[in-house]
Image 1 (cartoon, helix red, strand yellow):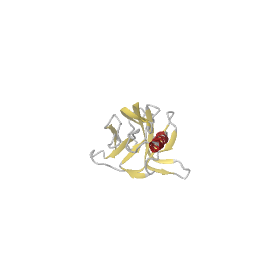
Image 2: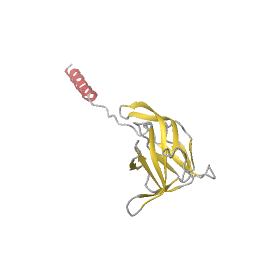
Image 3: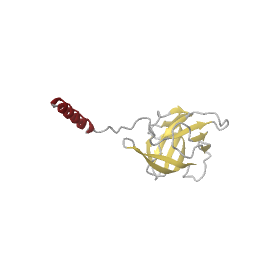
Image 4: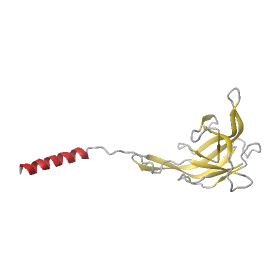
Length: 180
C-alpha cells in the first residue's frame, strides 16, 4: 500500500509540476502575418516581359510629403525586376518615391529619375494567434502615380501602373505591375 501511495504521490507531483509550465507562444514561420506589397517592373512595349529597374531606390514618405527613410526590404540601388514593399498598417495609404538610376551628388542630394506613387487601401485587421498577435490585410488597393501633380507626369520614368490584385492577403504573386 505504501508503494502505491508513493507512486501516486510522485505521479501527482510530476503532473502538477509539468502542468504549471507556461506554453511558449512563438509565431511559427508558416503562419500568415501582415503581407507586403509585391511590385513587378515590366517592359511597356512587351507587357508580358519583365524589365529591370536600374539602380533602384525606394523611399517611404509620411502623410505631409516628407521623406521618411529608404526601404530596407532589398539591397539599395540594385537592378530589380520586383520588390517587396511594406504598407502602413496604421493608415489607409502609403506613399513612396521610386527612384530610377539613383545616385547622390557631391552634396549628398538624391539624383535620378523620381516618380511618386501613392497606394490607397482599406485595412482589415484579424487575430492570428497569441504568439503572432494581429495581422493586417489590405483590400481595394489603388495606385496613384505622382499624386502631387494630379495627373501622370510625362517626365517620369514610369509610364503606367496596373493593379493586378486589389486584395493583398498573400505574398506569392505580383500585386502591382509598373510599366516603364
